[in-house]
Amino acid sequence: MTLPVDGPAAPPRSNGELDFAEPWESRAFGMAVTLHDAGAFTWEAFQAALVARIAASTGEWSYYREWLAALEDVLADTVTPEEIDTRAEILAHRHDH
Amino acid sequence: MTRPPVALRTAALEQLLTERGLVDPAVMDRFIATYETAVGPLNGAKVVARAWTDPAYRERLLADGTAAIAELGFSGPQGEHIVVVENTPTRHNVVVCTLCSCYPWPVLGLPPSWYKDPAYRARVVREPRKVLREMGLDLPADVQITVRDSSAEVRWLVLPERPAGTESLSEEDLVGLVTRDAMVGVAKVAP
Image 1 (cartoon, helix red, strand yellow):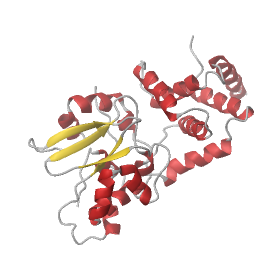
Image 2 (tube, rainbow over the protein chains, first blue to last red; image 1 turned 30 degrees about the horizontal axis):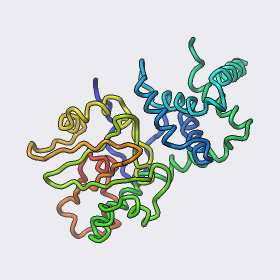
Image 3 (cartoon, helix red, strand yellow; image 1 turned 60 degrees about the vertical axis):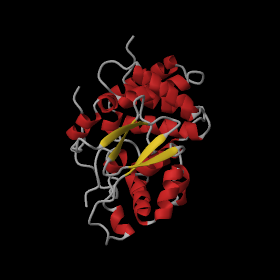
């Protein structure tokens, strides 16, 4: 395993480091924080789901992929994976046009 | 069965939750903007510079990190249970979250990508001296290294050593020296 290291530490006053590599990552992050703030779940519950997803992670590493999966896990009683996938397919076709 | 790509699943989930009145995209925008621009290691740097210049504050910080940090106005999600440990010429602390990515958001912002990476999380526990050297911090053999594993119960923050030759600097000047990496313990503060 090699250790990927960012460039030199960004000076703290710049706060300029890119937190999210792609826009969807920031939406997945924002959704979890917003839902937690609204009382949809405890952070402990989300974190436990995240730990489990990270532990089970295989293939190419993507932190926010596991983050999204953990969010789906804690929302399982509210939104099912099937609903998400069906809507995602609709969105995919919309992008085709 | 292969699921749709993550970007589409994220958009789909946001739509479904918005339709059900469970999230407000405008509120999400504000949270994201806050963490992208306002909350970051500058907050932690202010905490460190205060501790370097005010011995009573330093004591309070080491006794109860979350409370002393809140004195400077920094609090919020992931700011509970912050424990501050001091690096000295003979004892070096380095922080990791082996299970996920626990990190004191109010003082450091969101963790950098290497902090979340499986390689860092696994290796810094096993061979901290080697990992630190790879990251540019070559510690003398007689320096004792302690790896601090963050969790929901304890989020560690390192109080780095104040560099020699900075005695004449003001608290404000010192803030500018303190880096995120020094507060995670993968670097020292350079004068």
